[in-house]
Image (cartoon, rainbow, N blue to C red):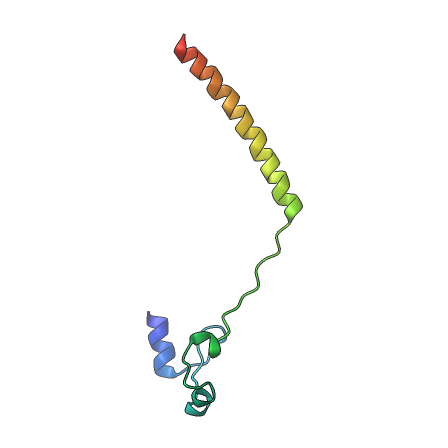
Amino acid sequence: MAKIMETYTTRAEEEKYAHAAEFVEIKENDFNLNIPRYVDTFEEEKEIDIDAVQKEIDVLEKELAAVRVKMAEKLMEIQR
């Protein structure tokens, strides 16, 4: 909240955070005060390495299968 107050009181321009729009600019935008009209907050998403994710999924599925086998063995012991 302190950053918001400081930005407001100093009327600071900060990329992807704050823009002090002049009346003319607001009028040109038909008095639309939606933030994205004045502040571009878009950030590109990181690229996902599909092959690496698939390898991780494969490892996790193998671990899960091993855990299920152990769990089944423990359940058989309990039922005896």
